[in-house]
Length: 492
Image 1 (spheres, rainbow, N blue to C red):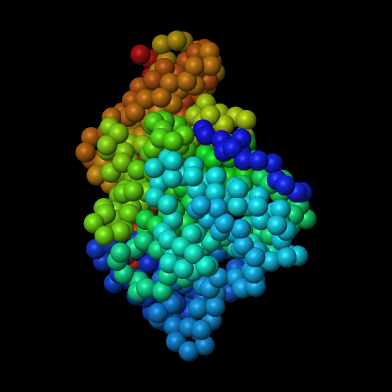
Image 2: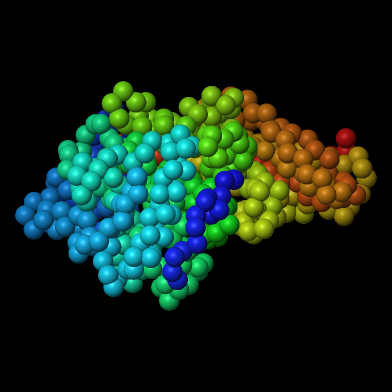
């Protein structure tokens, strides 16, 4: 992973969870949904107000949703929306580099701190552009120039680290690229931000929020889980030593809650989804400019500028992984099984103490048993089987039979054997089209500590633009599916 810290001089002196995105993205049809109702627009405005008042929320996405729907508002609500979407006032001083301008006011902020912010954000900008990302879209003469504007305000008192928004006043329709301005805290004081140092909080927030400005230059209406998941992912790519994003893994993530759909937007879950992109980039590590190319290529596939592909999140992931010789479903299934061993799966899995997804059931097996579970899309469940003491002969094996849904609906299963020697082996269960398959593995207590089977619903099929919190605001076609496994010890 690249680290930008070394590029930055020492400081001269000593928000980001909204309701489901209201619109689809990447479209052939999303604009029909995005127009929304006035009630939905009023809800978006109320949500922004709540987050600004210190409510639990993702302000960047809440403002994005309001920008989508403000045309549905009239009168006082429309005026309130315009104010909320506007830039902070009273910032009468500025410092500019060749790529960004920092706006601030004294004594709220100091020139020395503003310079530190300018140096940090400018370096982040150069890092992203050097890795092949598009620069944020110029904003005409907003803020005094076409450069991307960063405003310093005391938002920490509202429980906010930072946010980005757009005040580009155009209809909600293609093309989908928008300019952005961002707001960062005026000092990241330890009294308001007790985790990490002030400079570390500035660094990861700048990396995260400026990535939103980059994303907006491709498609500001993209699926929220992808926008936030990749923005949380990039924090650790830019500032590897801070590791602030690990907090999301321990709260709501595919590691903590494997049975909840990975692409669900809400709570802190969309932040925790960053670990999927970490998994992919560690397995496809090709880099450009010091950053993995895989996420960049996904972002490019979502681009909604004129003539661009304009795929929604899971489509873009599928297209990019197909170009790397696998499928999105296979990658998700392998990810789900590998998460049971984060210390072996991720470069920082041990040092940062990534959580381990819990098993659904833990059974000591001496005779046949079976289990069944319902799984939603992009979710998984793991069962553990431990050989009984009576299974002492090395001839003992375990036959695992799975009766899942059709493979066209995303079914997959992987068997992981943990040997007493410390060796771990992972094997796919070969399923027929109906979702049935079998696998036999050693199961002697003398050589096997435990056997796990991870049942996966890796479906990425949606009926899009239905106003849901999932990919393409779509209704999943393969939720709540029955999956069954039966196991039987036998002598081989």
